[in-house]
Length: 117
Image (cartoon, rainbow, N blue to C red):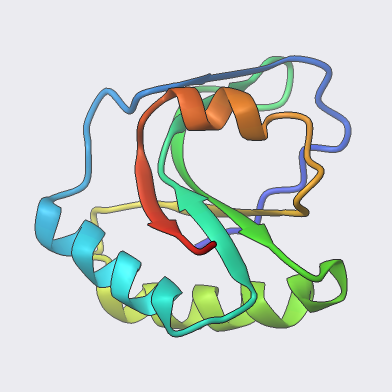
């Protein structure tokens, strides 16, 4: 898994994945995220960063609070995803703070895999 850093991207297109992960895999990811209290919400949309990516790809868009926990939580998710995903499945991790500009757009894709009030 790769951690996305799209700070240089000027335009990011966000939508429902053309090919969704199997329900079993989504349940495993959801269970993983429930174990991490800093994860506020998570989604699995497909994104395309114009000028950066060659093709759209699926991402695990994870909202983490507090911001200071982003690095540690991302490492934990990356490690666990290696055991969940099959070799042919790819899902990059995009960790963000609760103030990220794309949260509303990502929510509109209806690709929710985790939510914590």
